[in-house]
Image 1 (cartoon, rainbow, N blue to C red):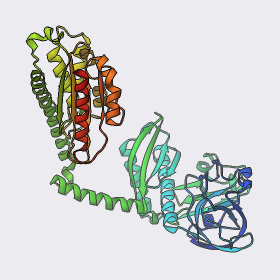
Image 2: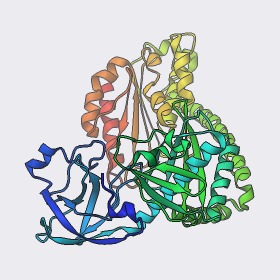
Image 3: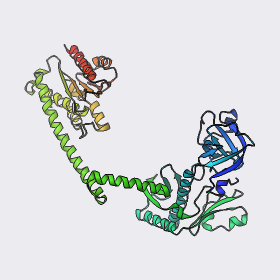
Image 4: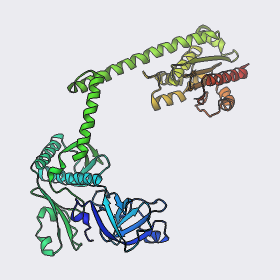
Length: 493
């Protein structure tokens, strides 16, 4: 494949060239040629917008995607370029957002690269070459692949782990090479003699000897490697490199993340702003940030545990009051099993479903003491009781959702109570939730009527039904809640 202008001079920002061909992106010929399919070297855009076209030029300053480096962006005749790639014939194709009438075969056009994007890619790509070379020469750690992402770059090394000391050593050596301003240049070898004369370290990487010409990028005294991408002329233009993260992948590979050049400069600015904000929020200096946050996390955990204990105790008090309000008492629980259904209604604005579940469990325990409750009740109650409100007043994610749906349905089988418990604010844009607990047959028979009244479906295990009231204006949700309460009461009486 012939080199294009950007591969001969990475600093070329514009070029006047001739259009070789133009193909409407909606043309049937596109599908027949396979030009827009995802494949090695082909466009990553499967469905170009209406009016787009594929344009092949005599030469271009726009780099086609390859070697881990994303394609350039820019303009052709002032029109935005959406993608750049080589087709199966080896031609560089520019995908234009629209097709001006002047862009036809034989016409002369100007191609302009998005220089900020290009130079960023040059900095990151050369930084990757430098880091990979030093990891190999210093610790015999070789690169499997790399990715130049939008915000950061990654390198996959062929080892299950890399010590932080090793990363620090590679990083220090890389930045020393940058300070030494080592030149970076490319060359093309084509003859068998030239290929054979290459250093063993280059030839052992598996050169594409089947190609008539091989493009090599060399960092003086550090590395020589096959590459089709764009690079800086001197390491000093990278400015600085910093490893920012590492993780083990597939048990045999370590992925490291790095920033270089302008990306690192922007990141340092962001880190500085964040540091000042933490200073103000934590009322301490940067050296104490970790210690302070660890202490705060421990305090929050202790407060959360204390709150859960207090909320559980509060739920017990509320349960006893509600149970007593319908004439219940633990002394005559056996006789209560023969009584008609009784209705208990309760609302708490600052609670959540987890808290309501704890209240429901406590009420059923009062009605059905452990001596008369099926053996599975103790397990269910224990699980549910732990799902008390968190310090924020919200349930604990999936665990709480599971506990709420696991209402004390076993205890409800022998209960003569119907509980309608709600939580949330109804004073403004409503966020009300409800929990209904009762005998299985009762809940199963009337849950559809509740859903119809609320206007949306709920769910739950046998003997329970829970859900949310739809958002409504101030007071409307509470009025709807009262409708459900009246409906349930009517079913009982």
